[in-house]
Length: 454
Ligand SMILES: Cc1cc2nc3c(=O)[nH]c(=O)nc-3n(C[C@H](O)[C@H](O)[C@H](O)COP(=O)(O)OP(=O)(O)OC[C@H]3O[C@@H](n4cnc5c(N)ncnc54)[C@H](O)[C@@H]3O)c2cc1C
Image (cartoon, rainbow, N blue to C red; front, side, top):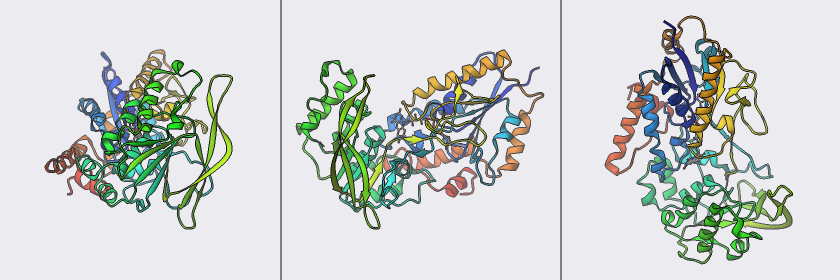
């Protein structure tokens, strides 16, 4: 009998689980999927990115749990593929053992603004702030000074709105979520009264989605400060704008009209401004913004053009939410400009048995569901390669050797069972407080629970 097809999936976010699910759903294919994850916990940004006050979105994890329950699936947590630590494994070790490897490692870092003063304390990446309030162990020890009255968030996408909303949400609301306890405590003591979200183009060009824009008053208990003249006459022919843009404009015009009064802690939206410089002696004290005008190119693309006019605002916290950025994997090609691994339909360019899906394949765009289509495309390519001989299986059956090899390489391996222990402990800690879970945020503590040392 033929040995089963063996596939390693590196990264346990949505794209990893959708790739695993697509493989395990194939009828007539004997396949084994092993998922490698550098953390002790699965689900990628569904656990560590999606805002804690959006539990419905996080419930997609039940789909991943169903995949993880498949008898041909194994979870190997606390293994950093290509990482520098003890217990980490190399790319070559995986390709020597598996017929195929799919990288679904996401976009692990942030894009910089590239302006003077960006390195000052108090100027931070949304990636770090989001990781901190979501209890990602890499960011647990960060400390954000929330003693200023105004925070400025650069960026006009949903991550900017998440960050602003969390900074403005009443304590009682956050206390019912799975926000990390250290963040809950720090936010309770916050002195921030205003969070200004700054977009470089106009209100018709923002990347906010309508539900996220619309929910702000309900979630923060305050109106949203929008300047009426910034949301009137935003395009020559407004009727021709896409429906989603028109819906957003309607909401922002309602905010500008003061439909809901402003509370003591509120979000402001400002448009047509770009950060030029961050000022301060030992830490952020002010931000200089350039005023922009819109310019419509021959191709219809609307860009922001500097008018030369400047504004200076007082602030103690500048958060940049201008995009996540993928990191290269040593030995694989990397497109520096787009920060993705180049591929043909999901197969890594010039590689034989390596594939990509999710944010490392197409960049940090789309919603969670977008990763499903993306992962299915990759799996379809992998299976086609298998059929046409572009992907040649290893000789013999190497599957049985994998777990003993890995257990030796990583004595602190977190299996699916280990994750179940973490999951159960977190959920039962949350239950008495009406919270979905209380997260463990320290790597050693997570390992203690998973390996039954706690
Ligand atoms: C702040 C934020 C909020 C969001 N909110 C929403 C929302 O409300 N709704 C929505 O639809 N979408 C939302 N998204 C988008 C959504 O989270 C992404 O589309 C999705 O998570 C991308 O999936 P991925 O699998 O490509 O990457 P990730 O989810 O980032 O998963 C990658 C995984 O790979 C692991 N990994 C990385 N490198 C290695 C390695 N070398 N070895 C082993 N493991 C590794 C990581 O630890 C991680 O677990 C949000 C994104 C962000 C950043």
